[in-house]
View 1 (cartoon, rainbow, N blue to C red):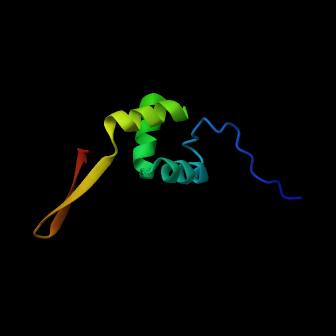
View 2: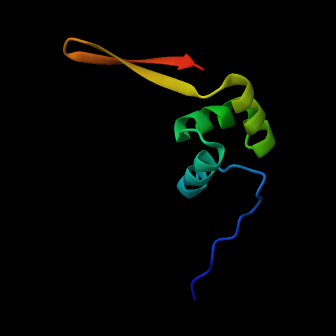
Length: 77
């Protein structure tokens, strides 16, 4: 018998579960990396993560090409 997945707590983000990361990154409109950084900084509470992302803004990567090597430069919006 296969069990359906139940959300343990809909107000917490589990950084160890790839499905959880994918869901919350789409829900919040940020990349998974930004979500992991936010969880690392403020904890797994959805409300704290949302406030952090609203205040800090997600990291936007700019590609700077110069010859053979491409460099990624992080900047806040």
